[in-house]
Length: 148
Image (tube, one colour):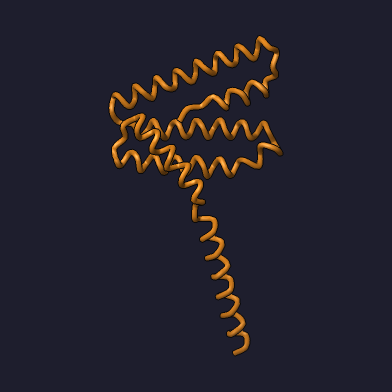
């Protein structure tokens, strides 16, 4: 009987710990929710998104914030890996945004925005190369030029 009671107590304690860990990690922080909501509202206005698209955009923005938080420690420990992950995160986010755009006007505006970003990146790359900046510095500067 003592073993059964001990086993039951152990199972209850483990279940409580697992629930507490899931509740704290699964619940997004309110600042992230606010940031995602603001970005969603800005992009919804820019692209004239309908309600379903706005909901999908909010999901994309929350994922972007969650992934950004997960890779943040790499910025100080492994800068090259951090830059690669940020670049992949940006590409993934842009692909997700493009996927939810349905109308011709939305797609045209998205393409114009991306052309503008590529032009800005090209100009920045040329400027930094003329100034003799290193490859890592150029890559870091180009990651800062991002829209959406």
